[in-house]
Amino acid sequence: MTEQGFGQLNSELEEFAGQIADQVQSFLVALKAVALEADAGRAIALLLLEVSQISLAGARLGAQVDFRPHAEYQPDVGPEADVDELRLRLAEILGPVDTYSFVFDPYVPEVVESLLSDDLTSIASDLENGLRHFRLGNHAEALWWWQFSYVSSWGNLAGAALNALWSVVHHDRLDAEFTGEDDRVAAANEMLESGPTPRG
Image 1 (cartoon, rainbow, N blue to C red):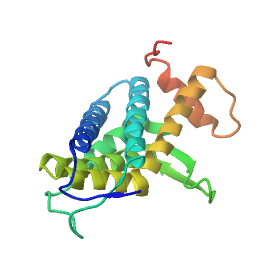
Image 2: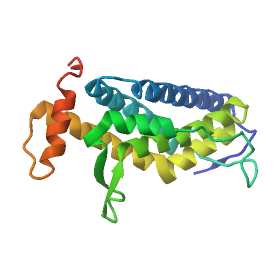
Image 3: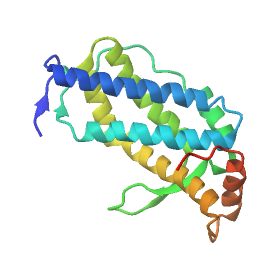
Image 4: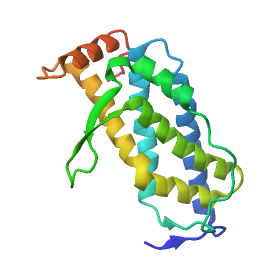
């Protein structure tokens, strides 16, 4: 792929940067709203939707040119957002389905255990960092960061989280028998009993 340098964005890429920024902002707002949800079933459904949408934004970044930052070090855009309260609230809502397992690299299969609350807030931190660059007018820097962090970190976490959320819905909707982890599956089913049923 060719590289796109800082300060050299054409109008098409400027528009693309704006689209990604809008999707990032939407995800961050929605994640905070989910953290305030009293209904765990509705929270799972909303997270499934929001993680799906931000994963699409990441795929668009991954398919783009390789963006190149202006300098070796990122411009100072102020302190990172404090996501501890968000993480704790998500952990409380997700409860017994917060802990999940996934294969970190399908080409070097090794099952790891993680927390949805940790991974979702890690994704939010990466996205928010790029959004601060964008809001200061550093659009190429924002694109570089979003693309780099997608490939190196949050893209994998989003894929794993999406699969975990899908699994909760899968067990609830299909009432699939699952050997082992029975308590978690039962808890997932109970959480979703009162959740909304999307239109077919």
